[in-house]
Length: 198
Image (cartoon, rainbow, N blue to C red; front, side, top):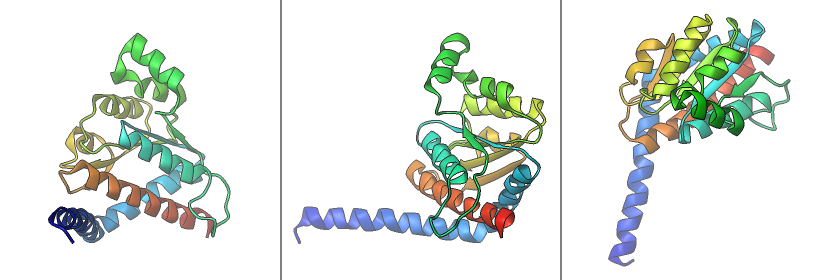
């Protein structure tokens, strides 16, 4: 193995080990909070509500991924009914019209104004916890008397202080945070399915 290949192998192993170590830390520190969030989401659905999800960039993709698993299913091993979840970042027409007319900070709050009900839950995904459009979304959800949840990273930012419940992944590295976020979304889906269908 030449030096360049050896350096690449070391990089691969380092990145994977960082991810493993962070997931182990989350396992020890956040398991109880993950269960609390799953209860809130399951109760929302039991009470006739829906889950509204939003995020920016990679977090928008994670929100869409999570919504897809709720509406469809997590695994082909499990048959159950569809669960009500809507991603607020997937309608290009609404996003661009709102950004043009009211500014990008309003792209999610405007949709919550239109769609949100007191029995619904807003789940914001953010690696920093400081995205202005997500903060506006939480503020609007609170006006609508919705429960609010943050799936966050770093120190949780302003969203951790505003949301009713927060899961803060303790890392400063965006890729590591996002890897854990999608793992948490998979776990939440499993817990919600068990709560509603077992």
